Length: 94
Length: 430
Image 1 (cartoon, each protein chain N blue to C red):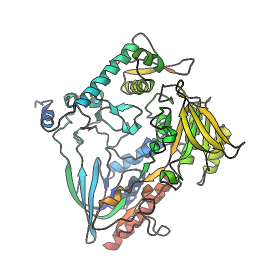
Image 2: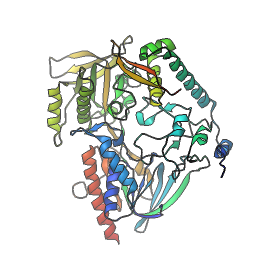
Image 3: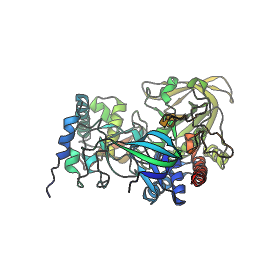
């Protein structure tokens, strides 16, 4: 039996409107994720080092780095810097 | 198999609700649990370890959740809420609203493909906003039922979940469903609310990233933690000097909660011991006005923390300020046991030991009769010495922290009492 992989999505699209704000937030997160990946492309870094490259507030970078870690995009190397920060690096998932 | 008639409805699937349901189900009663979240487990499943034994919380909670879910005499309705309870003769007519998960629970295998591919990121409520979660998500790794739920308010309707689901379990045609049940007895196991630390603005919670509450710290110490280690939410730095502020929102008339929450001293001591294991070089200071180590093994647990090197400073913290350059915090307190006077100390992380508040939502469920609450908005125990689970409404009982602050062993004891009282009641009305 063939299965239309988006058949129920069509149903909810008729009755539920997605806010533009949610779409923008989703785009923003994807941008941040890519920016973190770019910051780590030349080797492991600590959160303050990533924040400096991205030019974003430290707390926002910590939240996003940890979220990317949760979803398997990055991982800690196990190394700790002299000023007590973990290093993070890119993982297999893109 | 879902029925429309049960012996007992338990409202709340936390540790007290599960224990009550299991006791009654083992006695042969048919029980339904109504849980508002997408998983049972309540607050205990989110904890790291329990005091004073330091047993792993999820190692205790997960088998009980599994047993609850699989018991032949228990039905669990998750993501559901009680709309109304109406007494009809010797029974209750209950209206339940089951919210749509947009995932077919009978098909979902919990593989998390939808979660892995969902592009949305919102704050993860089960990690108290320390990390994000997807719009398609499983509440937490030990969730039961381990099925996904679509957070439709944050979903962008991109359809990727439906495309990638190997079980064809995504179903956006789901609608809210209402059920009408008949039950002979009701057990309110609705738990408690954490004191919102923002209600003490002088402590800077929500303003200074390195001021966190104790539930967030328990998440950091848990095996299913949101970070890779205990690090500061500001910058991921390993903390070296951590402070605890006890009685944040307990025993505090100005915060609207004059009573002792009974758990904060001991969970703070527990966390201090766990932190000394996780961060052997860190200094831990606990600012307290009293240490209430009243339970079995509690005093020894307290002394053990002292022996491990945890510093206890008797003094009320008045204010916390942030040093902008470092994110460190200045704790201003009155030293009432040492050399005296108003003092300041610098810490690189502060944990607010927030208290318990009542969850009075059960009071709004009853039609044509009023569930009495006590002066602190907990469900009133009308006969606390002889029938501690009894409420003012015949056939309605309460278990766990619904009736007042309790730790986990006391919640389980309370559930035992509730089960016995419910069993006796049902047999008496036959």
